[in-house]
Length: 338
Ligand code: 13P
Image (cartoon, rainbow, N blue to C red; front, side):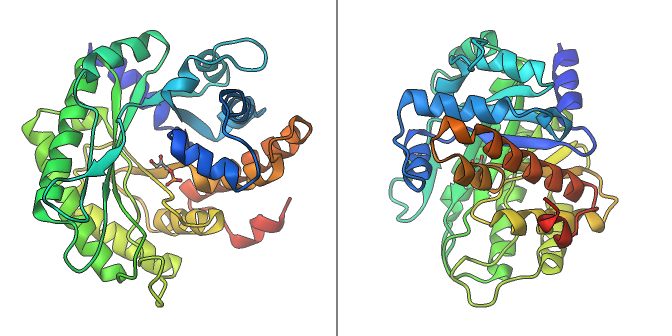
């Protein structure tokens, strides 16, 4: 039983490789497409996501892709179901299974992620379609008082219940607690909240009997709020992030794959590189970026099939630079190399 979980973790956590997050929900992908003047139709979403996955050589730097439910059932340009194209590229297909977030009642400013009801049945179906790992995202707004204790506890509980359901069906859970970058809070405040959040998440995972060896953590890095005047250098991001991770994440967790969360592509790569330059660490530190991998490619594409190769080239370049960052071998001069 656990053989399957072990094999999937082994394929996902490979030296020099990370995960491509391509699981934007309907409203989110519409927002990203709008920025490049593309309408969010089912066909455009299919074209975009199969273009990304069909990038020649992507499997050299990317071990897994997180898909949205709709994409899991779509066919790539050659006619293959998308999960089969992933497998051919040597990339493990995964699926976002949460049903999005909403307000936490009686806790103004806090949010809770939905989707536990019927999760086991949905997962059985996704598995038949080829998904081998899953993702659930919890979000935490930050201020002087947010998130509340109730939000921290409720989201930890939901993440742990989700992870337990996944493992009971031999699907590897990616546990994603995202401390949001929005706001003007300091890096120290982000560190405080992230430590509190991760501490609670791992306590809940323990209560529910989740095998830490068979899951991945997808956290945010410890950074100041976007509107904070005093921004942090990669060295400061690495120091603060590592301090929090060492205090809260057991060494049994095989991989930590960060989200980019609003960092620019170059920032996300430089920060990951700084983290890995301070190794060795008990866990592999890699990426599970959405925007930081897709943005330059999307700018090159702009909805035109004729731009497909340019877009793929831009994606491959970002994937390659992030791969270098997982080894602590990235330098800013590599940005201009191509
Ligand atoms: P970003 O890297 O754009 O934050 O996306 C990662 C993700 O999967 C968010 O849920």
